[in-house]
Image (cartoon, rainbow, N blue to C red):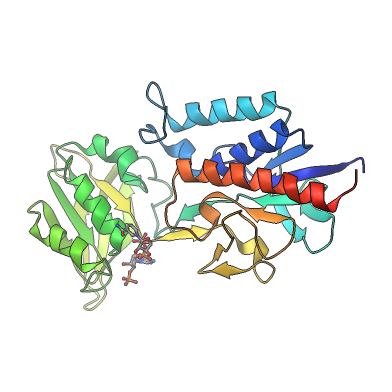
Amino acid sequence: MSGIYDVIIIGGGPAGLAAGLYASRSRLKTLILEKEKMGGQIVTTDEVANYPGSIENASGPSLIKRMVEQAEEFGAEMKIDEIKEVDLEGKIKVLKGSNGEYKAKAVIIATGAQPRKIGCPGEAEFTGRGVSYCATCDAAFFEDMEVFVVGGGDTAVEEGMYLTKFARKVTIIHRRDELRAAKSIQEKAFANEKMHFMWDSVVKEIKGDGIVESMVVENVKTGELTEIVANEEDGTFGIFVFIGFLPNTELFEGIIDMENGYIVTDQDMKTNIPGVFAAGDVRAKSLRQVVTATGDGAIAAIQAEKYIEENFDE
Ligand code: NAP
């Protein structure tokens, strides 16, 4: 079956790279397909302090660089291509990308998730210049400054409280007049004197010159627009957006079983389709971290190997 891979992994983040390492180390003919750049969400992280063993110089990019090298050393092939269509039902799985067609005996989906965006003018332009989707990554830039957190769920409120360790004032901007976050989390937030709340409000525009300098907020009940301008001494403020995550699963809608858009697997990373596995943030699961993504990747690869052994003669 020349030209057919044993395993194709879709997605080159920590889950995909770990799957690639384990699959190629098991001597499977392995291809990792990534649509943009190896690394996934973690490459936007300056410090990875909670991945076991990452102590010195453990930035997201340096960790990914080592993961890529390690998978390549064991023989995993890597290609940049965006998969547009999949045919997963047959014994041989077919993936159609912008640059070609790929075939494999088993597929591991590790396409990850991405933070939901506000979608207002200026958001993309000022990402990394005041707009952030990761408090642990960027909180230190706002030491003793003012920050705003958009969202009202558990993540927004918990990350807001984390930001109070750095910022002098944290204001939660929420589109309703009641938080979605669990009551126990709310109670802690209301008791924290650095936390403030702007209710019934949505961010309409983010402005600045190179960095965030102001933003326009609309009161959804009155329609009133307010421009929040950076304190003159600070010159800027932070906008941390936590309005949920979107799994990258569009390609598999109607094909693979999902729960709230996330792919459902069993503990062996098996989806409802034989020979198709999922790993990392794209799965329905309780903790989305590098450490859980790499664990998923390893399990998926070993299970893919077992599946191939049981279902293919050569
Ligand atoms: P979430 O629960 O879906 O909350 C998203 C928040 O963003 C909601 O308050 C929502 O407003 C708001 N929102 C959504 N789209 C918006 C938009 N376009 N513009 C403005 N606001 C928008 O997401 P999450 O907080 O990331 O939590 C995800 C899951 O992880 C939840 O199940 C959560 O319980 C869990 N989690 C648990 C913990 C914990 O237990 N310690 C910590 C973090 C996360 P509305 O309220 O008006 O819908």
